Length: 176
Image (cartoon, rainbow, N blue to C red; front, side):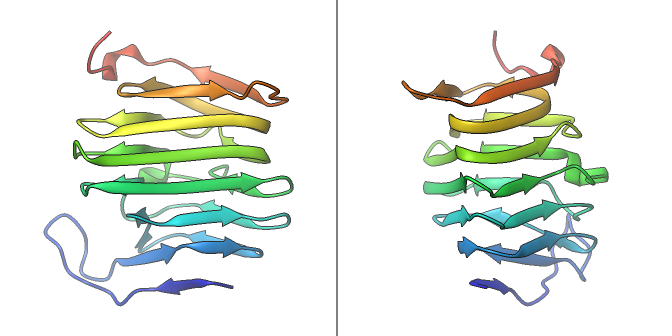
């Protein structure tokens, strides 16, 4: 597998034992971000390949793609790949696609894989001053509360994908 677990660090908002799981490159097996871990990507491309799973369970912090830094992070879920929040609890139920900086841009592309996100209490696309894009070219995505702030959800021209939203919570919208 092409991923690295970074050394533990201390921060005022995180317990000193929290470790950031740095995931970039190809995921071909199962990578789990669980208790005591968190995942935030900046300037990376992560591809969840056929048979690969990125599982978010009970991390110490939200899942954030391109956090508080100028640049672009991309997640691609290929046919047979799974981005899985089905066992998520606590902070694991929150995902931000682009967060906290005007130069931050995040892209999630579903190219035939699966996004299991029905447990997401917040799936925010383009939070604060960042931007986000969710491309659905194929596959199946299920999310809990979807909140599109400064971003878009795109179905490709020949998309065979499906999006199911199990809840809409407009109380978190920055602007309507």
